[in-house]
Image (cartoon, rainbow, N blue to C red; front, side):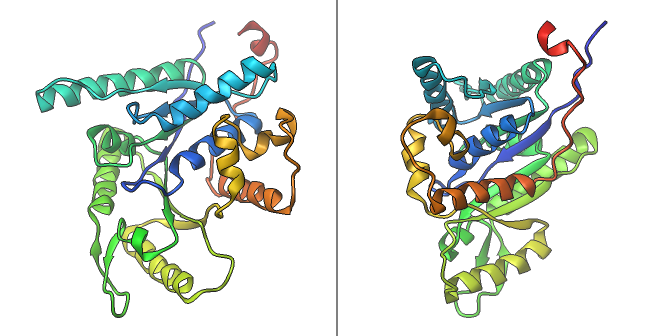
Length: 284
């Protein structure tokens, strides 16, 4: 009997500004979904920088060196074309992207997490256009807010959407043209301050106004916590700490951080896991 592989749900992590926690968010979503029982694929569209690729390689090395069977996704990097002709280069990148996504689909991935470059590239635009869920992490300040829109410095009124917001709008059109699909856009507020500062309130109010104007919803992201940086080099996440046995005691701050990850995953509106046919896993 031929196995029918349905289209996976695609989660895209994208913005055009570095340092917002995009790759940290990517690996935590990947591992959280694996631990929830999903078959997960991962793609890195910034193979030159290779942040997600490097994190997953470190995770694989940890598993092999320690003999601890941590969950791992199917992974495919997608490299930029080296062709000089722009149209030919873009065609080659489309072919590479679709081949990688097709391989993950054939491998049975129910969800594919795509980490996009922190810059405006053809691969990034292509990745956005395949999203079912787009997550845009931003640091909670008007410095990062400028990636979404230009804001009047005196009264914080929205002057106009940014180039990135316009690119997302174009990606939405491309997605609709391709398969009549739509995607859910989440702007994730990272590094939220614990105190109720005026800047935090102003950013939140302006963000909600922009959300209604250009069509996204907001979600609280991750706090500024040392634990994320401690785990990164080994390719580990907060969901791995107890099983990995690396000598980190889970304090209140770590528990709060893990709850932030769970809250994000719970906000994604993901499809239910596919039913497993008895004996299929063993046969695979």
